[in-house]
Image (cartoon, rainbow, N blue to C red):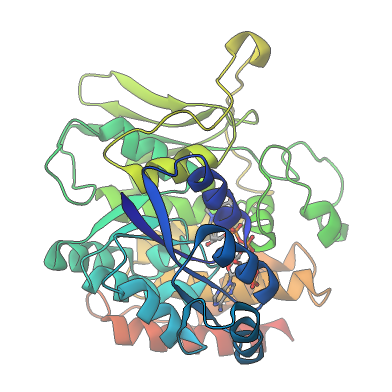
Length: 390
Ligand code: NDP
Ligand code: MG
């Protein structure tokens, strides 16, 4: 029986994870739940799954949850401390990180330092300091299993090649990784991107996800983040990753080995599969998703991304090239810009501008920043990005 804590249990990934766990009552058990402010849903989830430890980021939601659960669970402090306590709790085997944005940074570190298996959905911390997290995981005997569908696909393709590796260790025989992208809401759009609304940008053709990542998919920043995420997870060079637009989201990503052989992981676009694998790894559970019917799919298309129309891709590649604290600046500035776009304060096409201008104000120096330095860089970049909004 694997004991699971879900950080962000009320979101798209969190709810899907509970849908998986509901179907595997003999293998997976929920012990901890956390979210930002949706105390009503956390209370219902805690009751259904018998979660014993809970935490709400928002203080008034935390008080509300306490009333609702009436002594049925142990409550941790609101704010990031509660998330960290939950992530490191001795009763937890697997921490599913599915909060959104940089707030997941400290809880990821806490889970790693407690030697947990991390089912990693929350990609932003792996963009901010992925190499440092991998090193830390090695040191504390923690394991990071990616849940994001493309990194999970790559992880699945390389399994068996080094079965002893705790994390996805560097594999010398990888020549190239094929990282696919659906193309997002505007993959086929030919109109003026400067005039698109949040409502339009939130209509993703193949995946149903939270708002932040859906906007990141529309700008293709999400693929830039995944580029950096997989470089860190699998010790890849930027040049080894080929980004390919694949509108059907069936070929979730692939790996080309030294001899030219390509392995890919495929399936319908349903996050339940990589979430399940993240929680059961290295075992495979029973099927919780619809089987892939290739006759129904018919065709798989692949094409080159349009770097001119979607500058975020190149901006992320530049952050990867610069290294040091630059990916943390990229992630923080994007979070500010996406929030501003969603609240109507910024045009869609100004998202890359704000990120680029924020990065232009940062100088990479020395080697990899420490975790504390990354936290400071993140705070600086958020302030700078706010200035750049004006
Ligand atoms: P959602 O917006 O749907 O959900 C976010 C979740 O995080 C909610 O449970 C929310 O709680 C919680 N949350 C937000 N802020 C805080 C906070 N400060 N403290 C505690 N909890 C918080 O996001 P997604 O599920 O779509 O995405 C989650 C992460 O997974 C992101 O990093 C994303 O990039 C990644 N990911 C998502 C995929 C998907 O299919 N959705 C695919 C691949 C990666 P509340 O409801 O109370 O606000
Ligand atoms: Mg993805």
